Length: 187
Ligand code: SF4
Image (cartoon, rainbow, N blue to C red):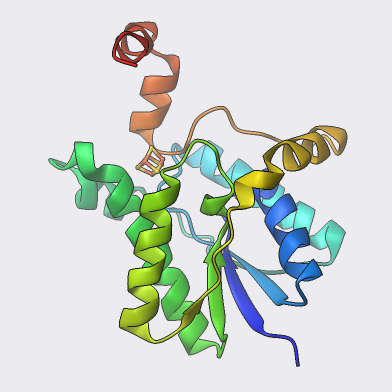
């Protein structure tokens, strides 16, 4: 019988490759949208609605958290901005596991492991740690191998692709030229 896997999903473009990979592995995948890190509200709604439309079109099962989580997210990261990505990953992964356990899934994974722009090793190690803590299996794969394939398919299907990670800090870093210059200087 197929393993039931809950796949934390950050957005539609990042779901394309991991979903097809997992389906080819014989997993019974349900996507789970929970991303209180995405701001401002119109961007959050756009990513959520894009994913909802995509999954409906592709007949992919989806559980979608509709509530906008700005206030709680900011309360978690304020004064810890340098460490915000780890807090952000943990927040999303812990909720995924709680849902997975509550709904009887046997395993979990995340599309965060697809992105070339995320801290892949940190995400994998947090998943491993949470898997042990909560006694649920974690399916690891380096989905970055399918990065270009996923991008090409998203472009082909004209799926909305965001230009910054999600939080208002990342939006600032993406568009403020003075910050971008500093980042480039230190690379
Ligand atoms: S940069 Fe991305 S991963 Fe880091 S806190 Fe912001 S939304 Fe989360």
